[in-house]
Length: 168
Length: 122
Image (cartoon, rainbow over all chains, first blue to last red; front, top):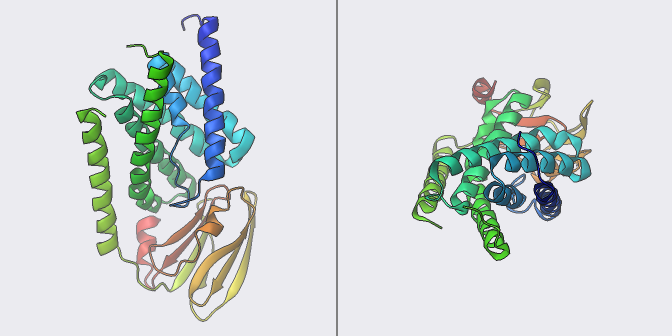
């Protein structure tokens, strides 16, 4: 692993705290539309880190943001879903960014992240519950994920450009 | 949004809506006959849905839920989980409907007489 500069550490910790705040704020506001459905606004922190610091940083942010967020608010029982979803979606966003950026912008990559987040969460739940029938929820969650993905993608994009921190 | 962004989003949306329609048409729930309560992937109990009103208190190492079976409907009245999503899911009465409580690892399913939903899911 490359040596982390003080600046990188600061940016990473800042993004982890931004992610936690978004995650907790969303938990408090959500449970509208579909039970269990969320827009995934905390993904803004992951997407932003992916574009500013690269894949390793974004996975670190996803991992720590979801773990700490669960300990602080969501409950320990939510950890497998939250951490699994966040980390796997960060991995896929990294992959899609490598393959398709700049054809796919922050928005498209964020939508893909949202989709893989939902897919992973349902897969984890299916293993825990021993029932594949939970995949019936995937379409509804995917539609919600597309909306949330576009919103958080634009969130990250605006944030990147306003702060002038985007790195090509 | 770039062109590729729109394609990706549109494909996901169209496929999801198509699957939803498919579910709505072909997996349409009928009036259910039995309630199957599963905790942590194992069948905890099973009850008749009709003509048998009851309250079931479920206590496991993951938490507690109070399930009410009344007038051919099932709902969760009380739960120890933090988000109470199972309570918010409301009443279910048809096959293919289910109530899930992720934190307490509880799943409530409704099946027909022949239990055909059951074969698919277990």
